[in-house]
Image 1 (cartoon, rainbow, N blue to C red):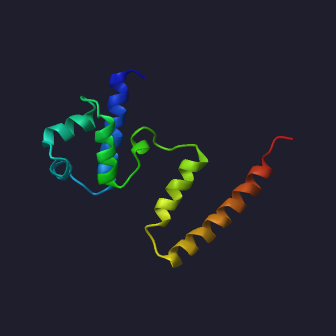
Image 2 (image 1 turned 135 degrees about the vertical axis):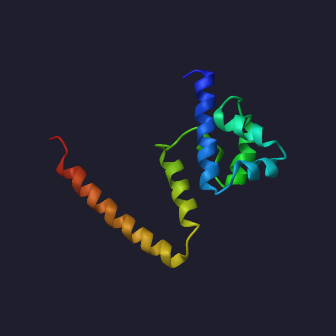
Length: 119
């Protein structure tokens, strides 16, 4: 992946995080004190976002800076952080429900993995 493709991919992820946060490009521009066109250029990847700008965007969108670099991490620590963040949005009662569902899902998946292991 060359720099142009990398900037475009990061730009797509900026746009995705902005949309997840329920913000318009205009709202982002206003919050950052930049023009609408500057936000559009960041999202299209025609300009590279600096690390400080990515940190501002992450704070604004309520995501991690790393979310602009990878869609889904395979690291257990990253996945744990994501689960913690998701659970923090709901009530303790809802968290208990989600954890119970997760336990059942993991038990089922473990059974399936054992069933199809190559001996």
